[in-house]
Structures are given as structure tokens and as C-alpha cells.
Length: 394
Image (cartoon, rainbow, N blue to C red; front, side):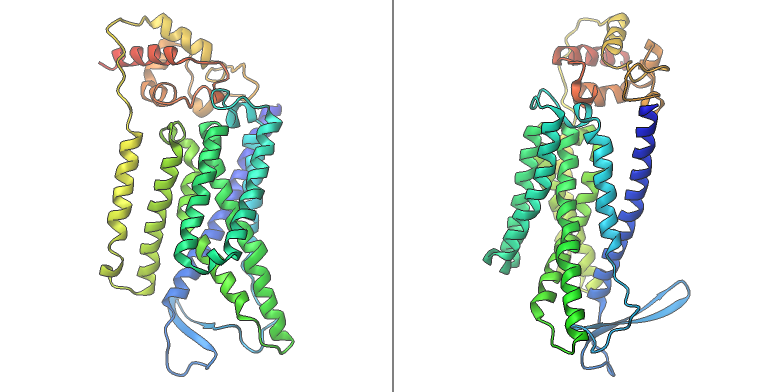
């Protein structure tokens, strides 16, 4: 019953996280696209930076952007903030339910670092807080005045976190924490910088004062960071579905490629929205393409020499019983599940033959399974299982 309740919490928080995330990313994409499509037109108020004509749902819209803000603001001003706040809150709740509650299975890998659950959770929380403080400090320092230098510093910071996580957590835990690390920076940018600065500008205008330009400049800087981090963080958040990513011995290098690929694609979309010619941003396609090719080469399955000895079905089935069927059975004995994950049962040789490719990907080509390697599956056992799979695919 406890596992059943945890599964429902997981489902509800994941659903809420998706809904809030779609809202946040959608508004982010929309406003960046809107900002880049603004044009100077005749008849605009002198304080208006530009306007954009848009059509959607059978209606036409004329949107104007003020350089700082109009002299008067309506009482029904709409603030776009709760999408970001709720995305982080539901994401952290999901982290608690999935990774903190099941820390020994999802977050800890004794072969990486033997940690107690409370130690792993403490490192997780401290890294999210520390990451923001370091990032914010860099942005406020003289380094933050140079866009190129700041971008390099942010890339190095994320890479340093990725390497740290890969030496502390399981493969799944490491990559999900890169996503949480970046997502925390993005959410606190909204909560701690962008919205407060907008409120200061609005309050100054209400008092009839001239707002300080630095508030808008700082908010714009953080908004651009969030924009370019959106695509990479999305992939980090779904990485635990792909053992070729989470099980890679140098996952931090994959993080670097994901940042480059996502950033290049986002720049392409941004410059397209801005109306640049294709020649001006065509370089983004080969950069992203080369990044994808390198990632595919890095994650390609390594061919093992399984030898010529035949592995009996009984031996392979014995490995399943030892390491897998506590979860993957009609009646699981593991406290973590009430039913076989994804309906995959591995209690007979026939069952195993139905899922040869999945078993190979999860337990031979990577150590994604068993979760957290709780049963202590050895490399020799993985090789034996790989040999049995190979002979059954001939």
C-alpha cells in the first residue's frame, strides 16, 4: 500500500510538473519570439520600443513593448511568474518522491560512492543552493558585464556540477541533478531577479519616478540565460529513460554536448524569429549536427568478446532470479513496486527472449539495472548474460 501511494504521488507530481513546465516554456518561447519580432512603425508612442502584428485563432493582435514602462499601468496587469514557480516546486516534489524517498535505488550507487541516504540527500540540496549562489555571484561580478565571458563561465559552472554529480551519484541521479541544478538557476532567476526587478520598475512608475535602467538590464540578462538553457534542461529531465545516457562512464561529456546542441538550436530559433537571413545563423545546424553525431558515437554499444562457450538457459534464468525478478514478476517481492515496471515480467526463458534488446541495453550495455545495483550484479555476470543474449539473437 505504501508503494501504491508513492506511485500515485509520483504520477500526480509528474503530471503537475509537465503542466507547469509546458506553461513556463510556452510563455518563455512566446515572449522571446515576440521580443525579437518587434518592429518600429509609424504612429507609435515615443516611449514604445516597437510593435508586432500577430494572428491566432481567427483574431488579429497588435502588441507593443515599452522601453521601460508606460507612465500609467492598469490595475489588471498580468504577471507571468507562477508557471516558473510551480514548475520548480512540482519538480522538487518529484525529486523528493522519486529520488529522495528511494535514495538507495535511484540516487546512490555504491560502486560510485557508498553513501547513506541522508548524506546523498544533503549533497543534493546543498548543490542546488550552492549552484545558485555561485551563478548569481558570477553574474553580479565584473565577469557578468561581458556576455561572451559570462556564457563561458556558466558553461564551466554546469560542467563542474556535472563532473561532481558523476562522482557522487548513480548515473540516473547524476543527470537528473544536472537538470535540477540548471532548473533551479532558471526558476530563482524568475523568483529572485526578474519579477522583483519588474516590481521595482512598476513601483517607481506608480510614484511618478524614473525607474533605474539597471533593473531592466539585469532582468533581461537572466531572461536570456533562461532562454538558452531551456532545451538542454528538457533533455536532462527525461534522461533517466535512456540508459545510453545515464549509464555512460563519461556522462559529463554528454552534458557538454547537450548544452552545445540545445544552445545552437535555440539560437537558430531565436534568430529566425528576429528575421535574420538564413546565412546569418546557418552555422547553428552543422554545430548541432556534429554534436549529435559525436553523442551517437560516444553512446554506441561497445562490442564485447563473449567467448565461444554456450550459456545454458538455466544460468541466464538464474541471473534473472537473482537480480531482476524481485521487481519484474507477476507478484513482485520488492518493497519499491506493487507490479512489474512497464509490465515487463522476467520469470521464464520465454519472457527473457521477448525482451532481449531491453535486457541488453539496461543490464549489459549499461548498469542502469538493477536499480542502484542493490543486488550487486558483477561485470562477469553482465558478460555472461550478454553472451546468452548474443547466442539467442543469432
